[in-house]
Image (cartoon, rainbow, N blue to C red; front, side, top):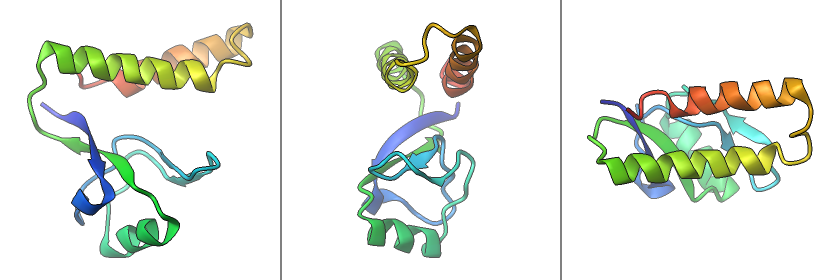
Length: 106
């Protein structure tokens, strides 16, 4: 089963695939979900001071790990959508993003 693994930049290797958008410290997108890592891209992450990222792995997750990842994703989206939570379109977008980011955890 594919799962999302939070790894340190030093653990990243060419050929790994991002499982979550990669943002800089200001929240600007650097790479999108599904981007394959290359030596050049990894060098760019080093230059920008990126410390960690989320990649796809194949490790089995136990129920506690699944619950922890669900909670992390939910907290991230709650933070991101905190100022627009009352807008129906934004609530729908948040729900779609939650489903997308949790896909593959079960």
